[in-house]
Each structure stands twice: as C-alpha cells, then as structure tokens.
Image (tube, rainbow, N blue to C red; front, side, top):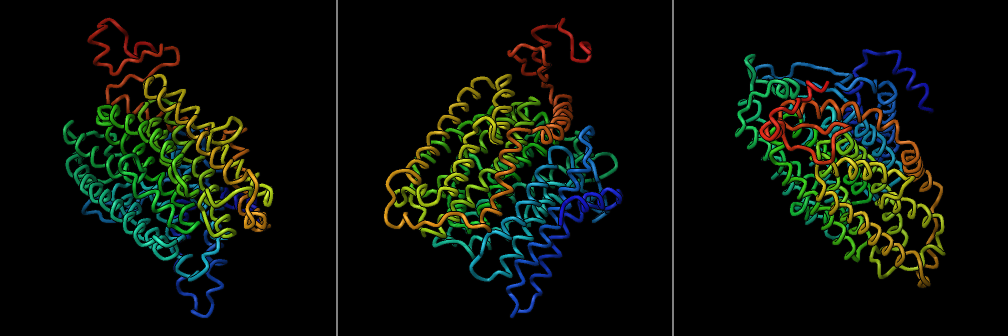
Length: 539
C-alpha cells in the first residue's frame, strides 16, 4: 500500500488523536501477537510488522500535516489521569520531537521485517512493538509523570531482548544495562517529584511541563539540584564518558534488531531529555552547568573515537562511534545557538539512520561468517561487492562526508558552537578526523587485501536484505543533498526554545551581526557596559 492514500485519509480527519494512535497501535499489536496460538508462531512477525508499519504510516502522515511555520506544540491531546496529583495524559509534538517520532516509527517495522530472531518470534516481536510504543510516548509526552512512565517502559523490553536473543555475554550485558539505566531513573523520579512539588504554581501541584516552564517558581538552588538529577539520568542514557561503559557491552551482545533500535532510538531519549527538560524547565541551571556539560561532551567525542580505533570487534567499534557522536550532540545543545541546537537535533536523526544501518550490516556479516573479529576478516569486497558498497556509503555518512546526511548535523554543530564554545569546538573538530581514521582503517582491514578461504565464499546481499537497507540508503543520500524538510521543522522550534531559555537564564543569544566574542550573560554585560542597549532596545 502506498503512503499517499494514508496521508490523504489523515488530512480529512483533523480531529483524529494521531499521537495517541502512534502509541497505542504498537501496544495493540503486541497484545495481538502475544495472544497468538502456540502452534502459529509463524504469524508473529508478519502481524507485528503490520502493526508497526501502521504506526510508521501514521508518523509519515503526521510529518506531512505538520505546520513548519508553527514553532509551538501541535496535535495536542489532554486527558485528566490522576487529577488529585495534577497528572494528566498530555501529548504534543513540535519540530524538535517530530523527526525523532518519525525515525522511531519507521525503524521498528524495518527491523521487524528484515531481521530474523532465529527463535521465539512471538515474545521477540511483542517486545519490539512495546519498545516502539514507549519510545514514541517519551518523545511526545508533555507531562513529567507520563514521560517518566514511558521512559521506564522501554527498559524492560530492551533488557529482555538483550538477555533472550543476544550472544554469549548477553545476560551480563543486559544486567549492566538495566542497573545503569535504573540508577539514572531513580534520580529522575526524585527530581520529577521535587520539580512538581517545589515548583507548583498558585493553582496547585502539576506535572505539566508547559505550566512549569512558563511559571519558573523554583528557587535558584532547588532548580540547580533538580537539573543535576535530571542531567545525570539523561547522561547515563546518552551515554557520556564516564557513564558509558554499559553501552559497548549492550551493543555487542544485543541481537541485531536490538542494537539498531538502541542506537537509533533509545540513546536519543537522553539527548532529547537534556534539550526538552534541561533547557526548557531549568534555563538558569542549564546556563550554570553548561561549561561542565560541553566539556563532558567533548571528552566523549575524543574518548569515543580513540577507543573505537582500538577495537578488534567490528560491532564494538561501531558502538564506540556512537559515544563520539552523542558527545557532539551534547556540545551542540549547550552551545545555546540556533545552528548548534538545530544541528544537534538533526544529528540525532541522522545518527540513527547511519549507525542503525551499520549495525544491520554488521549483523548480516556475522550471519555469513559467524565472527565479528576484524583480524579474522579480509577481502570481503571481492566476494560481496554490493555489500561492500553499501557499507562504504554508511561508513562515509558516519564520518560526515559532505553530500551525505551525517555531514549536515555535524557542520551545523561546529558552526554554531564556535560562536559560544570556541575552544571546545576546536577540540571536538579533531573527532571528525579521528572518525575517518578508525572507520577507514577498519574498512581497509575487513574489505581489502587478499581474502582468506572462508572470505572467498561470503555471499553478497540478497534481495530481502537489499529491501531492508534501501530506506537507509535513500535517507542517507536524500537528507545529505536536501536536508530542508528537517531544517524547516527544527529551526523554528529551536528558536522558540532558545528565546525561552534566554528570557529566564540571563544568557544573551548571539545576534547574526554580533562578533564571535559573545557575552556570557546580560548581567555581566551590563556591569561592564552600563550604556549598552538591551536586545529589546535593538529591536
């Protein structure tokens, strides 16, 4: 079925609660799959793929109808949930969350259709559908309690996918993943309750993030403590150095579909949380903590790149590359410029595409050779030229070669961050060079040179695998050549968020004609230049 009729159907029903449908369609799919008769496990993946694909079609319809000129939240839906505590089921979407929802809703049906779990397809399919529902719910939640519920929902399916369908060290990796993320979640729950109780408006306690953000009733110290707890929870999920050690183990031992969803979607919950809840709810605290956070981000860029170059396992190398890319996003978020923040959001999406495809490709190679050790592979290109070509494209996208999607976000982050975080940006830029080093070196060892006997018989990509990889190839090229659809949605929302941040933090946003020497805050500027005009005077 083509997307056209689905998009048209969505347009004629403007009151349709499309965000709720994006959450509940996969949940219904998971229940249907779980209730299948035991003697029909063969129906699990086709049915699960159908429900996941319906979610993907709804997400594309959402993107089609999204008003890029409106920087606020759209398609909002609110239902009172626990009125005594001010908790509601409130969902909405803006340009920052739009493409993350689309990415999530499109990735899951692709991996469900294209990756064979080899055993127990019923629970495998159900857990992936719950991952889809929880991730979308976290990206659209506008209530802190609802966000926490969705943030936690994704932990159990991912734990069970790693432990049940992973490789030899799967139980250790799954337990480590769960302990790290649950520790962060404990901090997050305490901070959410504190924010709602201490920051309540005159109308009473509320978990509505819009009400809390606009009211700004927390004292400075309370806001900073709450921000630290939020930030630690999200930094574990990102993850950043030194909270990253769960990630390589989880990626290495997870099944292919688990690695793809973990890289493409779950890591973005951390960076999205820093942006949505850090800058929006705690602007002054975000400004206060920014030097530490950009330092952590830049350390992650360099550490991840150097560590990736030392890996002998190809999948582990790709996992460490994610640490480096996430560091770039953290730098962009806390540079506080439209280009850097927008670039960070775009890099979240593009990293999900290119790294998700790399994990798929590594999984396909393992199915053929039953090893991921770089020193046991050689000359794959001569036996599987199409596979090598697709791998090259995704590798170059991950490096950030101009003309491919990975370049767009990294370039915007470096340009935007240079205005406010000059020396951090100079150091982070070396991460691009290091990325080229470790990826090209790994490619040379695996794909070039004389093939061993086992490598000579490596099968090339089959039709089904080409169909699975085709959306990634199209997205890498299309968004590299024409990123305007992403930029049109992201930029207005980023501008609005930064205007809110500047209003409540004292940070003076750099104007287009300002010199690179940007003042840290309006108070500092006024002290040194008492006659200097404020932004309001300039306009």
